[in-house]
Length: 300
Image (cartoon, rainbow, N blue to C red; front, side):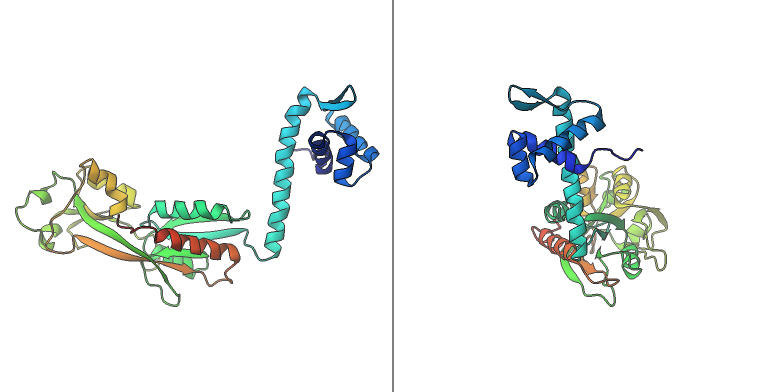
């Protein structure tokens, strides 16, 4: 790709001439001589090979091509200004990127609301969001790959901030054999049926959290897949209430009647990485995650 021949200063000169209504007015705003502004526009037209202004009476007005190029040029100079502002923010300690690692069980709605609110304060900082399951979050935090981490585990050596609890509920399709029993289900009843569990994404010490030792266990990579399988009539599982609400409404999933443990509440925690000092953008995002976690119960 060729290097651009027209400079940002030439585009700004054109914009100012149009905005201020003439060369003399533009020269005053730009603190330049009128002749230098006129020369900048002349050089711009020479380099583009087309006229962008034409004289009508005593006033310079945009040509048809000039109208099109002017709007595009505003986008260009705006982006350049944002880039310069970002460089200044980085110099002052503002992070260009935040790595956020979240447990897949944490409600996406909460994260979306927090990230949407963060956008207004981000100053160009990007967010890299990575989802992990169980110990996968812990591994990323310990490896220094997370500026912020949301986990349902208590991680040794890190201060945790509570984000409220998430409810998991034991469910199966209404026509599943477990719903045909005339008594409250015991652990022995469950062990004889297929259980669908979500794979721990950690590699070092993966956990079988929630598995009851069922004779048949199918393991899937994410909660959405687990919900779809169980809603199709395949096995039973403990799944987050917020993840399966629509399946409950349309009648494809029904809570199991257990002697105990049919509903489990798991506290979620927010951790700050220790690989480097926490920057201002990360602090703002952490505060927003906490605020949006407490707007209403996660079990609703």
